Length: 190
Image 1: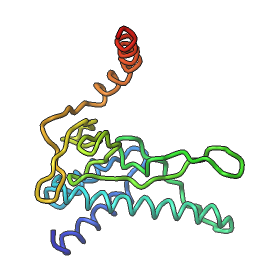
Image 2: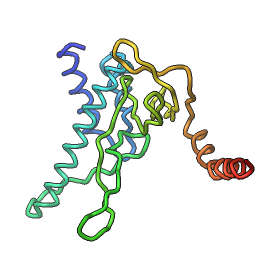
Image 3: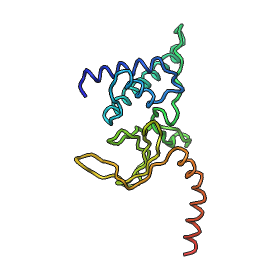
Image 4: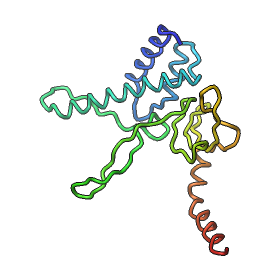
């Protein structure tokens, strides 16, 4: 992607974000709106990553402005605080708990997000070849549990795995206690 195209995409995405209701806007909506306005296919992985970086930079700038507004009460005009996007929207960093050495209490710390070569969020690595990712496919959020392989220095998804819609994921998540119980019964019978 050339620099002129990147600049056009960035300007368009920022314009969309400035006018958007941040409680209902998703990265997918921003990307498809920008794609329509520019007449450019932004669904390619390199375009997805670029749009994601512009959106994240915008959100970070908004959070910094909010922090500055709350730390400087003498400002006459208060900047409204952007609400935290939901799971299917552009996500902030994954939180981890860390124990405070002074009082033993747990406090949350943000860990950097990790994306694969396709621009999908890596939720966790099950092994060095298997991982769980969240991806956007044709406007649907999918939870993918998949095996990856290396080709030309890139990690690519194989056909070995499954992609679940949010509804399927929720059904699976609700079945986990029954699965754990069945595993325990099998192990106890051995």
